[in-house]
Image (tube, rainbow, N blue to C red):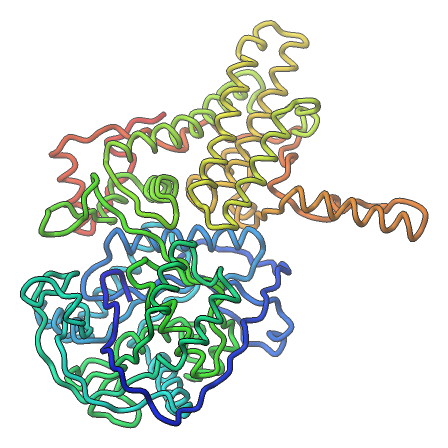
Length: 634
C-alpha cells in the first residue's frame, strides 16, 4: 500500500443485480479520558489487553501508516509518513491517550513475485528481507509503533477470508469478464484515455499489456450515495480540505465497480469460494489495519480484531493512495457492516533540490544514509518543520544543514549549554530558587505558557510545522531574555544583582524544561538529553504528560465557583494541586542539582564529497556512523 501503487482496480460498468444494501452507522465519538501508560525504551511496545474490563476502558487512539509495499527497500517517502505518524502518536501519548500505532508491510501481488525472482529468492524470502529492512529503519528513526502487521501473517489471512465472506453475503461481489490494458507495476487495469504515448502507464512510463481475465468484482457503484452522505455529514473525514475536494470530484464523476481478484497471480490469498484466483492486493492489504489489532497467537477473528479498537482514529497516507482509502475502503467497510475510520489524511510528495526524485535521475534520497550522517533527531526535525503537513515539500542538503544548525544546535542546544555553564560556575550547578518564585513578575513565564498552549493546538490539528515554530519561538524568547539580562555581568556585581542573576538562570532552565516536553513528539532523543541534563531521570521523562493550562484554569474556576454556590465556601484544594501538569511552569525546584554541561546537539559541519560517499557506503553496509563524527559541538 505504499506510494506509487495502483490508483484503480479494473473498472466495470455492470452492476450486481438484486444485491442487498447495508446501512452503516457513524463511528462513535472518541473519549478523552486519560489512561496512564508508561512508555519503555524500545520500538514495538505493549499490545492492547483483551481483558473483560476492556469494554469499560477508554477507546484507544488508533493511528496507522500505509502498509508499505515490499517490492523494494524503504525510501524517504515511506520514512516521512512514518516519522509524522510517530510524532502524532507521541503527542497523543503525552495527553495520556491509549495509543495503538499501526504500521507494517503489504506483501502480496504480481510485482512482489517478480521482484523476488529478480533477486534470486522465493517470494516469502524476499518479503522477509524487505520487511526486516523497514523494522531496522524504524528503529534508527526512533519510531515507537505498537503493532507491525505483515499481510503474509496467518492471522491476517483469516481476517481477509472472513471479511470477504461478509461482503459476499451482502450481495456486493459478483463475477464478470474484463479485458483491458494492464500495468504490472501499478497492478491495475488502465483506461485508454489516461495512458501516455504507446499505451504507456503515466506513472511508470512503461507500456501496458493487454489482458483478459474472468474476475470477481466489488459493487462500488452501489455506495455512491452513501459515500456522498458520509462526506457531507463529516467533511473532516478527508483532510486536508483540498484532498476532500479531490475525493468529492471522484465520487461526483461516478463510481465504477472494481476487480477484487486476479486469475493470473499466484502470490496472494486465495479467493475463499474460488481457489483458482487470488484476492487483489488492495482488497487484501487494507484489511491489515484491522488484522493488526489482534495479538500475536490470538485466534484470527474479524470481530475480535474490531473489538480491540476499531474504528481507526486516523489513516495517515501519501496523496497518491487517497482514492483507495477515501473511496474504496469506506465502501468496503459499509458493505461488511463495519464502522468507517474517523479520518484519512493525505500528505504531499517530497522533491529534492526542486526536482522529482527517481533512480533514473540519480537523485534519490536514502533515509538510511541521512540517519547515518546526521542522526534521527535532525532528520525528524527537518522534514516535520520544513514541510507543511499536507503539502508537497522539498529537501536540499544546504537548507537541511542550515535549519538544523540554526534551530537545534544554536537556538536550543547552545541556550541550554551556556546556561548550565553559568550555573556550574556561579551556583555549583544547583538551583537557588523554585522556578515559580524566580519568575514572579517576569512576563517571559506567561509568554512561554501561551506558546505551549499554541503548540498543543497545532499538534491537535496535525499542523506539525506550526507546532515546531511555536516551540522554536520559546527558544528565541529564552535567548532574548538571557542576552537582555546578561547574568554573567550581574554575577560579577554580587549582592542583589547576583541574586537576580541566579533567578534568571532558573527561569531559562525552566524554559528549557518546557521546550523539552513540547518538542518530544518531534525529537524524542534530543528531548530526553535535555531533560536528563536538568537533573531528571529517564523514568521521569517517560511518564511526562501535557495538559493545556487554559482548559485547566477554566475547569478550576468552574469547580471553585460551583462549590462556592453549593457550600458557601471555595474548595479546600484547587484542581492544580491534584493534577500532574508537566507543561505548566514550576517543574524546577530550589536545591535541584543539574548535570554537567554537555552539548545536547552537535553542530553539523559540511562534509566533503568523499566523506559523504564514505557515510553512504557505511550505511549501505549496515555499519552505523556516529552522527557526531565529522561534526563539531555547539
